[in-house]
Image (cartoon, rainbow, N blue to C red; front, side, top):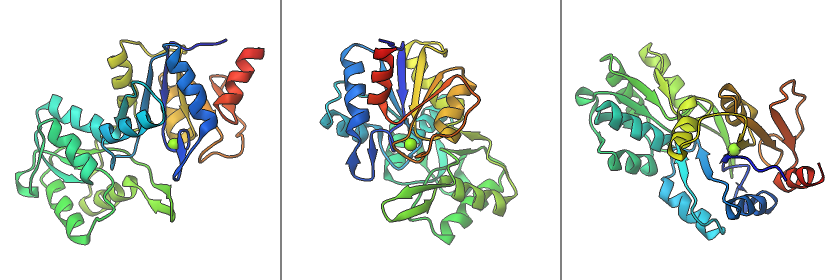
Amino acid sequence: MVVPRAILCDLDGVLWRGDRWIQENLRPLRRWEDRGVPLRFLTNNSTLHHLDVEARLKDAGFQKPRVYTSGAVLARFAKKEGRLRLWVMGEEGFLRELQEQGVTPVPPEAAEGVAVGLDRGCTFQKLAEGMRALQRGIPFWATNLDPAYPAVEGWTPGSGALVAALERASGRKVERVFGKPSPEMYLLALDDLGCAPGPDIWMIGDRLDTDLRGARALGLTGILVLTGITEVPPSLEDPGIRVVPNLEALEALDTTG
Ligand SMILES: [Mg+2]
């Protein structure tokens, strides 16, 4: 039985799809947790607060779930940088993450930086404010650059689409991005675990362009499950990525050799 030193794992498309839990991935993950493999969940979804997701994962049987959202990673960075007055585009989960790190959302004229996450209530007025903040030359940060994501009602613009609108309007380019595939989220989780990046760390995800791309850039082993966005096995040159229908299939492979 192959047991990794630690597991980093995506949420949407791995643990759930829409409002349905993906049991064939959940069961092996809970078994690895029971065996003492450190487990951390990484999501680009900045609309969520990490404690709300952790509560949901406890309901699904995890003992000590730890969740990193792209918004939480940005908020921790803002605190470290001492930029505590930001112009913010985002939803309640992101605003709470910022508030807990001591960051206050302020008007464009008073901001020391711009922080953009997904805002499904974004208006023209809000974009105009963001543009005015950016024209002041202050740092420009984004939770993630996902162009779109599958919502219950169909494909929907992601935070990358809002960042693109602000870039185009202001003539600026985003300077720091915290979600996958940027290294920040993986490194923060590994640092909290006291682990250096390496092939004995697994990153489990359903997206090659975010989950797995970022993992491979750090030399982690990538596990692509076909339970989410990627439904057809891609042809890959990279021996550092394993493609499996789901995690139960991976367990069975590793048991039989
Ligand atoms: Mg996913």
